[in-house]
Image (cartoon, rainbow, N blue to C red; front, side, top):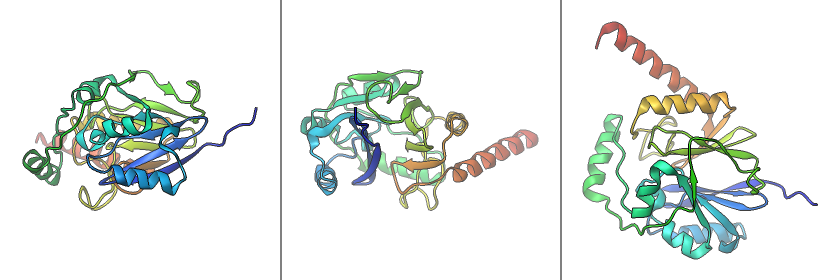
Amino acid sequence: MKQIPFRFQRIPVGIDTCYLLRGKKTILIDGGAAGHMEDFQRGLARFGIHPGEIDLILVTHGHADHIGSLHALRELTGALIAAHQDDCAWIESGQPALPPGITLWGKILVGLGQVLYKPRILPCRVTTVFGLEEYSLMEHGYGIPGKVIHTPGHSSGSICVLLDTGEVFAGDMAMNAWFLRSTPGLPVLAEDMNLVMESWEKLIRMGAKRVFPAHGLDFPIEVIQKELMAFEARKTNKYKTGA
């Protein structure tokens, strides 16, 4: 049987970047913000892909800017929807929470979002539910050399896709967009930064080499490693000073 080569492609959808993973089957990572279906359709047309070729939409987490167009995408593609069990309620109710701000700018963004960002999100049923265990995309018939990894921190149900070659599609576990932070690195919004750090340490041990965030362009894992070291240094200093 002829082996189908794997490849991945980037599709900008509003403020988000969605990714197509194409092997034996095709997976779309994330659903993008509400009101950007034309962006998605232009992206597919650029690569010569019919919407019906998408078999699965994998949601990295259930925040509004990642599920806003999910219902429309499901209607267009007929694809199944996959997410972690801890974020399914947001997706299936269409009523996601806003993540807390970690940095000063992150807190300002949350405050603005509470007033200004209230998109209407239609509920979607999640058909593939991930738990704590790793989910091999190769073993489940997608022909994609990688795994779905539970990486809590930004949300309790955040997941990443880690390819065998080291690329990690990180959702909002990392950020590199001007409206979020001026340089690439860790999220400015998160439920638990300690869990963010633990999740990144796990991904690095598993071979993560290059980070593909949902906001902004990709960057090397060394950026995250430096931020991990700085975070640990701040924790140690805080402990020593009793602050």
